Each structure stands twice: as C-alpha cells, then as structure tokens.
Amino acid sequence: MNISLTPQLEELVKAKVASGLYGSASEVLREALRLLEERDRIHAIRFEELKMAIKKGLESGEPTPLDVEAIKARGRKRLAAQQKKATG
Image (cartoon, rainbow, N blue to C red; front, side):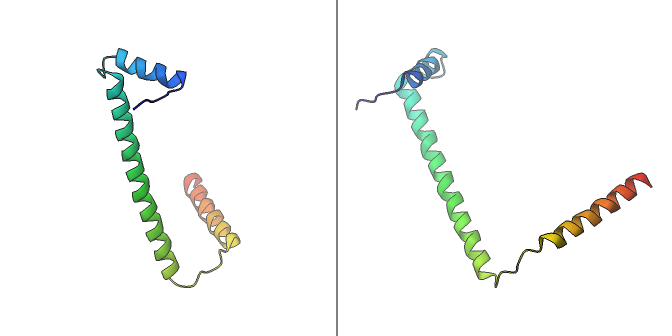
C-alpha cells in the first residue's frame, strides 16, 4: 500500500519517530488509525445517545411554548435577591 502525505504530515510522522515514541513511520500511522477508529466509535455512541434523547423528547408530550419574558423575570428576581443578600 502506498500512502501520500502532505509535507506537513510527513514532517509530523518523522518528528514522532525521531522523538523515540515510535520505532517507525508505520507505527505512527497505525496509532493514528487506531485513534481515528476510536473517535469514530465515540461519535457513533454520541449520535445514538442524541437520537435516544430526541426520541424521549418527542415522546414526552406536546411541546409548550418558551416564555422568554417569564424566564428573564425569574432570573432578574433571583439576581435581585442575591444582590440584596450580599449587601444586606
């Protein structure tokens, strides 16, 4: 198998081998591919979790409108209480 790398990636591989962490360019590439495989597995797991969360949300009932003004009012009230407690 022949693999072409950009000059930057080739220098990275050479630096890894020169550091002594890897015995050859092949070891560097095998490690990189293992990490890519691990990342893909993690992405797949997260995607499934997201799908389950969406399903749970859809099954939880009818959506209710978000009342931004009520949320702001509660936040302002909480902030005022904290400030009053801190100064008084």
